Image: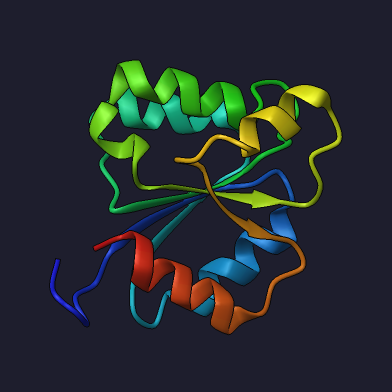
Length: 125
């Protein structure tokens, strides 16, 4: 993808205010879709939606970000390498171990909007 080209970004976060903040920050340059749970996001992708980048909360209720990531691998394996986790704290041993995987990219909350924009530039090309 060329520099400056609009990207399709999916935000999956149960914090509606944060999802909307991310959308407002990125929408001038990208097409941003915000969903509040992992199951809904997977269903959307199963129906054919594709994205250049997925920003996913690690600790989602119900279907966690970790479960979303694992299931995404069987639904749309090409998207797995374009997932960046939003981490407000890995509070379980499973989450800690998951984040220690070398292929996991994360953005720790709270983050600055410029950090967010840089992640989009770096991980969706």
